[in-house]
Length: 259
Image (tube, rainbow, N blue to C red; front, top):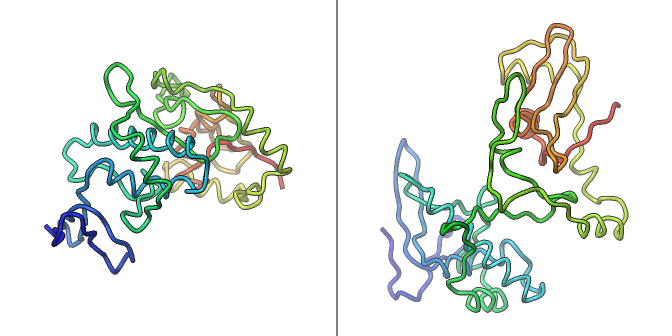
């Protein structure tokens, strides 16, 4: 365990080029080293907020993000079980830059919302957020937690506070800017042979010559499952796993086009 000389002094990690409030716990397992920053919730938030939202944005937006991110961390902590840590410091949970990331405006937003969380039935909600949603939010039960229903996939119950709702402001922002500037950056091209090979590797199924692909979509417009047809057989695959893990796409809000 590494503790600062004075409680208010940050600890620097030269390999990351960052300094952190609180203590550091060092753990070794299987030949690898895990470093855990043990820090108070609001000190943690001071290092998270500027990583998730630009400090010069409107103060009320920063305050709202502070409450959301604090709630997400509490939800992760409540589901940590036997883990020695609660949240990762990157986009797999929340971007956390420690003391080095702090700014005056984001610290003000954190301080003015201290102790504020979002609850449902007495528990912190799974306060998921993103920089963009493609024009509609999503029920996690349709994407991350989809369940097998007969020969296809369907939406799990999910959480009532995370239902799919349209976001016209998002689409209006794209209309104002013109074409989505990330469309080409996020575009991927796959041949039928590549799709066949990836399905064989990940699922152990040879579909034969690729014929077509169809989506079983949720109300939010994201594939609950992907039906891939070949001349030998067809497969109905979990949408999120196939699109993001097998094909490596950045999002499940996808459209296909021949090329």
